[in-house]
Image (cartoon, rainbow, N blue to C red; front, top):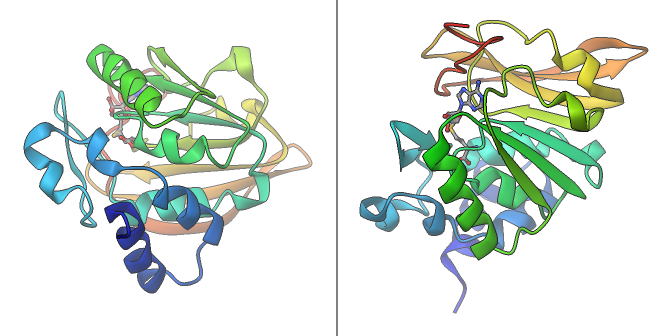
Length: 211
Ligand code: SAH
């Protein structure tokens, strides 16, 4: 019998056929029900964002698929995720990147995500508690940077922490609706590569909202 995670990736493949087969493979290995609130486990393999506690949500599988697919050219390198929440995206990313560095501002989620990551065999991920709106300078430069919370504008620290040739994706817009913009660092300057419409929870912090 095929697992529910595999079933989910078969549907995603039909929905977004131009995306990365490697991301689909990684998503098929990660049981998403581990990452959602107990009352929502039945819905874990539908294409919905779901509660993970503390007023936060896990992103839709299609969004995780698109975010990670956009970074395929830098797989194998070092990834930074700001707003790692439940740890689901980080667990999928751990199968695609050599090392994954996460920052999360809700302590309860830092603790539960560490447990979720261990349960799903993601040993190459570290989660730091704090405001990640300015990235994580100590571990820079990164080959890939993903923001999983929506910013009012592109965080200024990002360009410095991205390696030359690296790719970064950030949702930029209002508190309720954003464009997920993918950038590439070329000769020290960020160039826009692609974008899609999305709706993330707000990035709260120094380079986010209420900073
Ligand atoms: N990729 C995550 C999605 C989590 S939702 C997952 O797979 O579950 C976005 C997260 O961003 C929330 O947990 C929220 O607490 C966090 N967040 C918001 N602002 C932040 C900031 N400045 N630094 C770190 N995390 C932040």
